[in-house]
Length: 270
Image (cartoon, rainbow, N blue to C red; front, side, top):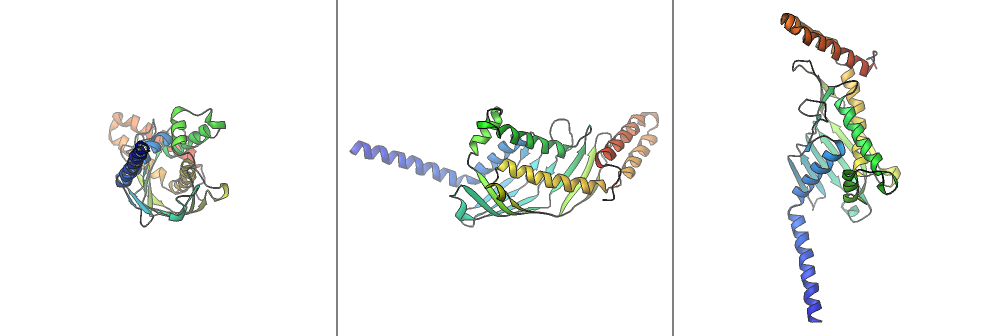
């Protein structure tokens, strides 16, 4: 009996020690999880400057979260999400569905880079959708290794989010052949509600897909109102000033201008 008690005591101490470690390092654990899972889901490098979790107040703050670009795009990043604050219903943390009362994304900066008949934002959104589809089959039988690992890590993790606010954002359009030039405009404030409510909660990947879809729609509307012709004219003039050596630059600008118009359509009044 004494040996059994000693054994149980050792197990309890190990469990307590592990919990203390997790509690003391919770911020860094969440930071690493966001970076690792985010990179694999979006297929673009995800980095976070800092995570601060206040367990007694059921709040979290994430600063400096950036989503880089998928292969084939070259701007510094696709998303720089500024300051993110989260308020959680603490009573739901022990339940099957976590209830998030509010998520506020303040001052995000988005770079919309035009590629070959697509954009970096649309590509990231498709990558997330592809990830969801890979893990949605029976027991994930068609999932890739990375998708299986993330699905297992987050098994049972479902959330309902009452409100997501995206405020004071900005969008810049970029493309190859622009000679470093960009056009910028404001992103309209967004308010999403009841994410995951109709399906007994959403997985983290599904939450990301829904938010990215809303941002992508808002970005296209914002960028479609930019003076793309003016931007292309400016780059064309730069090409002319370079003489024959600038012909490739002007040709590239014309090609990008046509690609942009093709993505947004000819009617930009809507």
